[in-house]
Length: 224
Picture 1 (cartoon, rainbow, N blue to C red):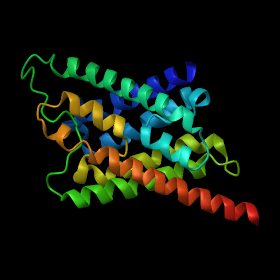
Picture 2: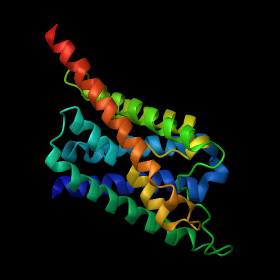
Picture 3: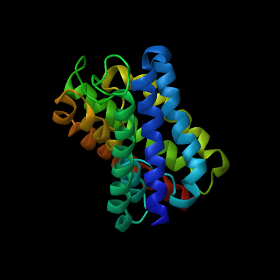
Picture 4: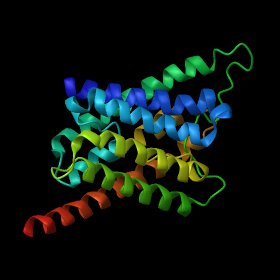
C-alpha cells in the first residue's frame, strides 16, 4: 500500500504541476515554461517518493520496466490504477481552481488535454510512440546498476522537459496515459475522450519497444 500511495502521490503532483502550468499559467510561461514544469515535477517526485515505489508515475513507464525485466508483472495493474486515481484527483483539483475565476468561470476549454488537430493521426502516433520509447530508454539507462543513480532524477526530468519542447505542438504531449485520461475527463470538448485511445496505445507500444531494446542491449553487455 505504501508503494501504491507513493505512485498516487507522484502522479498527482506530476499532473498538478505540469497540467496546472498549462491550464493556469500557459499564456504567461509558454511552451518552454510548461515543458519545464513537467520536467521539474517528475524530477522532484522521483527524489521524494521514488525510493518507495520506484517513481514510475506513468502506466507506460510501469509496462516498459516490466518488459525490460525491471519490475514484476503482477504489480503492473495495481500501479496503473494508483497512477490513474492520482492523475484524476489532480485534474479534479485543477478543475475546481480553473472554474473559480472571477470572470470566465466554467470555461476550461481543452484543459491541457491531448489531441491531434493540426497534425495527422499517424504523425501523432509516431510522435508519441518514438518519444515514449526514448523516455523509457533514458529511465532504464539512468537507473541501471552501472549508472550513477544519484543523478537519475535529473536526467529523467530533463528528458521529459525536452520531450515536451518537441511534441507540445503536435499532441500537447502525452507519453503518459494517466495524464491523458485525467485531462480528457474534464475538458469542455468530447474530442480528447474520442482520441484518448491513441494516447494509451502509442505510449505503451513505445514503452514495450524500449523495454525489449534495453533487455537485448543488457544481455549483450552481460555476455561481454
